[in-house]
Image (cartoon, rainbow, N blue to C red; front, top):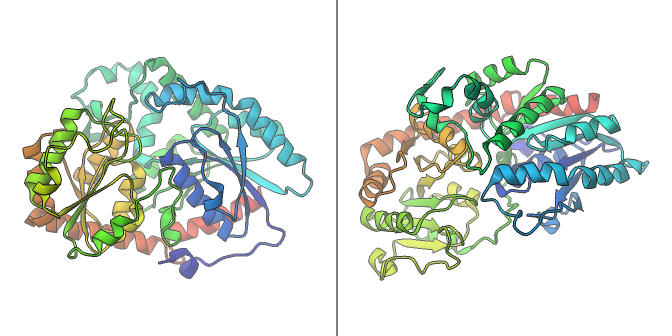
Length: 456
């Protein structure tokens, strides 16, 4: 359903102004940036995407945009997502001159008509580049407002000695423990705090902040964030992917057999299992997940991404012997799936997820209740809000044990508690659909963002 086309309309702007977008090179950041590009293109802007060679998007999937690649200078051992903070730190150094040169060439074209630059908020170096060319820079954050609000306050938590008490409730968030704050595993914690401090500084210098969320879901968080950054205009225009029919910017090839298999199943009967593009599990954890799915006796569609098992280069060799025979046709395994299509499918009744923000929001948008198994960073906060605040999911509390898993799956898929979660999920879905109608929060915010960019 193309909500935006029907409710928000397409505004053709004479002499199309150009927007230059720069996504962070991870799947969870590239997808929402390209979805944002589609929204702004539909409002009459031309779009140029500058991207790194590392995790480069496929231009042929987006023929309406111009793509410009820049060298990122990554050595082989640096081009890894195992230490996100180390990688972000290196990229924010290596990409300064290549990005500046690319932007200079673009601006030198008298027909370029650039209105502004929109970058991932973690590309903090781009603010000084934008200032040097005297063009406005807006930022996009691809997580929830709640998790990012907590992340930007990490230096304050650290200074107060707060982070050392892992079981302590977070001040102002009594259901959240200190150990669930959006921290990242890194070999050098100082890099994390320097990165956060740089990001906060450049947010304050930016011309605006775009969020992939909607006001009705995170009103309190948005209010707190505006208090911290009172001079930065905020634009919560999510959920981005709902403005158009399902599209893909996946860096991994998708297995189309998922939908064919789902078509053979009963309504709301299938548990969809996917842990995103970065999560890893030990062999022991992987086996517990597999046995939990077997013991649940419920149909499932399981995404087993290559390198899902830490240190293994194979695919399904670590499954228990005779696994497919034991599930007897009620399970289907793929390397990657078109998640938006899967979650919207009539057969899907639950989602076992790592609670990355894109996955969480996509599940909310389709009214699909969740089983939460967060692994790191913002996922911990998202999972807690799904289970304890919005109450549209069950939290495994990091217990990767076959008995706990089987019980949680049955509870979600065939238990009375699952029915209650499904009802609340549908109510939240309707709130989102309302926000996307003409004159309501997200749709109005798109119109406000369009006018704002044109005024810069």
